[in-house]
Length: 357
Image (cartoon, rainbow, N blue to C red; front, side, top):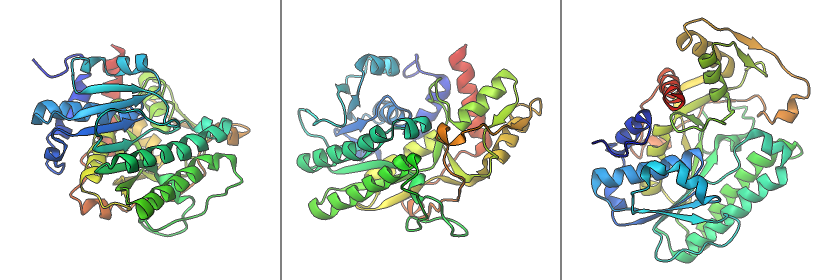
């Protein structure tokens, strides 16, 4: 009988691959406790599931504390893992002190505001969640003497980069602090500085992961980001409608590749450092990606249409940028992405079909 039979078969394939990824030193998690914030979000949820799945593959007995705001939602999210005695829910808010009994060895801080509209409709809350929440977790890590912590940041901290070629961890562009949407990248950038400060002043072993846009099996039905919209168009047999010219060029990353990267950074990364996390081979413009999806996933039965609405700024879209992340620093730790862009969409569409059947 397969592990976790109630889980998506497509997602189980990914979890199996993650658990057998040789570049992840799984033995380091044996009999340890891992705190995951944002555990009902995409990345936090997949981290929890990956660790629980690896427990059965490697007999690690890793205890996972999932920090969630809504325990009932968490129980639905992890219903296939209800028999896992290693999973513990901690209902609370990252803005308040955490009450955890026993030692915590590792922290994966994935809690964050992720919806673009929230950046412009609730900018104060976006900043507070990012900055104050990260301070709370760093203080917890300091007081509990954790072995390692990873803060999940974003490629948006680079802003508008004028440099030609690949962007390394030391290359930064311009972010306009008087654009309300900057509540997200500015607060993420400040949170990274806070991580650096805690490491420098208190020796907190924190690392930063700058993730590019990441997608794959595990996304939620309500996800409205560009990749989800493309897939929804394919499944409905409708044209892909872009609300911008689609000039932004960036990398993308498959969820399973992202999870292995985060675990490698947690267990092997250098404290006080930041790591780009992306698949540089997927570098493409939004418009070209839409055309690829229409051709390869819908067999040219749909078209790409551009309709730029009035008051575009109210939708919270990121400004036009061209960022091809350099992942050499992460590659030196033994990590390399395995899934190309076409297979990312193929797997995501299969997952959506499976979940809707």
